[in-house]
Image (cartoon, rainbow, N blue to C red; front, top):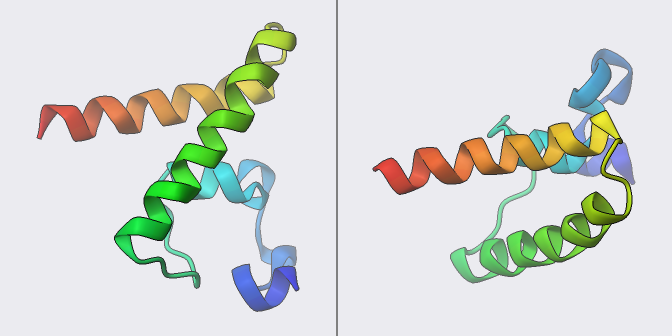
Length: 79
C-alpha cells in the first residue's frame, strides 16, 4: 500500500520516509486532497502530534516534525 500511495520507499532516506514530515515539508506526493480533506488531514495530524510532543519532549525526531509544521505555518501566515 505504501508504494501505491507514496512511491518506492527504497529511494527515500531519513525523514523523507515519514509521510507527515513529507507533507509538512511540502514535498510532492501522489495523494491529492480536496481543500476540505486537506483541512481534516492537517487537523488530525496536529491532534496526534500535540500529545505525543508533550509526552516525549526530548524526542528530537518528533520535535523535528512539530518544528517543520511551525515553520510551514509561519510561512503561510506571512503570505
